[in-house]
Length: 235
Image (cartoon, rainbow, N blue to C red):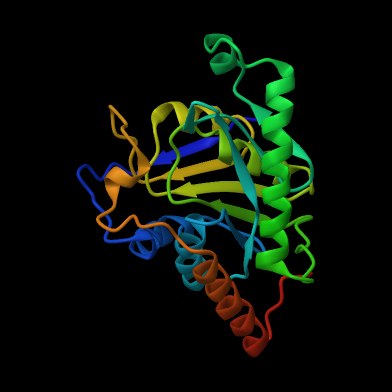
């Protein structure tokens, strides 16, 4: 797939918080020609960003649970990721560089994170079914991409549901992360790809952990708003 990549360079842009980043991203997404769009946020940090984008688009908001597969001795380093729909993506290049990451250990890490993924799906969604994505334009949002492995798993999960188009939207990312996801989606929208790229949190004044309660509150507010306005997620 030949993806269009939009990087709107905003050097030294530091966001107040994740919702501020969502408001900064929204105009670029509004400029796209979208058909029956739906916005999917990656919890936890991607939900506040996605909430602002969904508001700007007047589009439904939903959640796509993805879990990073962290290297045991360096959990922030992702050897891959899993997503709803039994999708798993592994960073083969990284695996070749780290001794001791055999298949048994990878399966152990995957099983542990799958348990947490299932817990979060139940926590955030309850009995609410997944939205229908077939023939819709899907905007997948996170608060940033460092390695891109988590977003790639998310994009593959979305692609398995036959959307019309898939767009990835993040306020900041490494160039390597953008390259990792660009070949499986229709468009990547990123406001900056700083080099060197240290960490996503470097570009926020407030990068405190998004709590489960905040995720649930924002989803509840969005879902209640959709009901009141007559919009649905085709669930």
